[in-house]
Amino acid sequence: MRYFSDSLRIFLESFSVILLIINGTMMPTVLGKILFVLVLPLLIVLYWAEFMAPKSKNRVNEFTRLISEIVIFGGLTIETFGLDNRVFAISYLILVIISELFEHTTSRVFFKKHHRVS
Image (cartoon, rainbow, N blue to C red):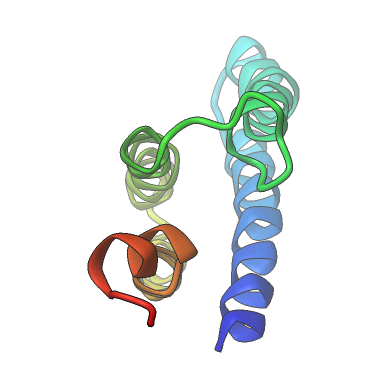
């Protein structure tokens, strides 16, 4: 189950960056295109690598990770929906929900906190 969750997560993270770049190309201004095609994807990847990656030295706690994921994935869903890509937005949202459920219900932290291991 963990293999499926990790595979889905890698796909979601990669797809998120690609979707952000695609959405950026649809921005009406040059500044919007620069921001959403270059700057924002780079900042998200750097933030993810520094604070969210499993082997990061500065990994944040589970609650902060969840809030960060809601902001990043939720914001991207709203942006995609706002650019009249409703089918992509709904498909992406379903993928995010499935990934979040697997990630936060199968994580080792969840099992250590809620289940006694004999």
